[in-house]
Length: 347
Image 1 (cartoon, helix red, strand yellow):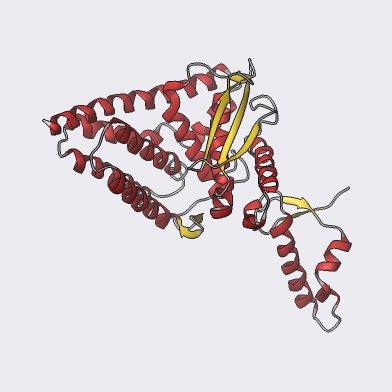
Image 2: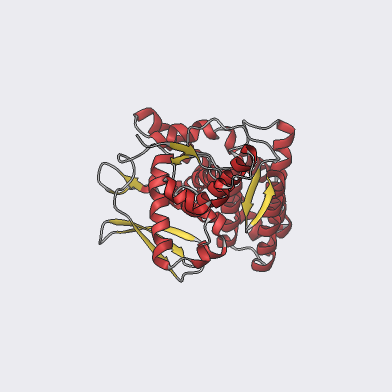
């Protein structure tokens, strides 16, 4: 029977490397002058170095800038297998055959469906895993979540009539991406979270509270540079960013106190204020809709994500549809108010 031990990097259990491998890596373990505690420390250090290179679940610990395109693509396929285990969906709710493609397209990654080949494809920029190696796995989890939502297991193709759920898909994908950033081992793990937990983003390590502040400021700088004047595509882009935030924040709602959660939520308010400043006109209805959007995770959160990922009963799928319809309705009404405010400003 193969022995397992806990990986020092990702916390999962892996097969212990054979004695020959470990002996070659840690000659100090055989140094007779070392005490037992010193020898154990030397062995632990060597195993940690082994995990850095060989751990199949924490590939972001490798040095992907040195990997070939083929090796990075293989890494992405391994992440897909990991994702299926993460959501406990080995076969029924995920396509077995997908194509993962390296591209030169600007941006991170995308999930596409080829109507001719009848196959899903995940495309990602070849430089992404080399530049943002610690975020590559969470980024791919985001796209795999889109794949899960779009896949129809009854036909083996793309689910129909999901267009109005686009923003709900982004909400769910952002939540799952955050779970991977927080190193959840599976979708159903009951994990204690706090504002002091660490998140790696843009190759920097942040406390949770600092991560959201950094993200908000980064997005605001992009908006300031991009949107001198707001049009409908610009408004939709900014609303999408707010949806990303509420998806990520949903993972914390039931894990930290209300005062701390309100502090994280202030970062969404900064983006909301950017829109209002650009429009210079607001009304009570707009404020109510923004509040409804920001509080969407009251209806969602980890418990709902669990249920809607199973989709193995009529009740679960009905909940998924109800959640998606609710978010669609909020955004549709909010956009109507924003467009009216934009037209009034132009007058």
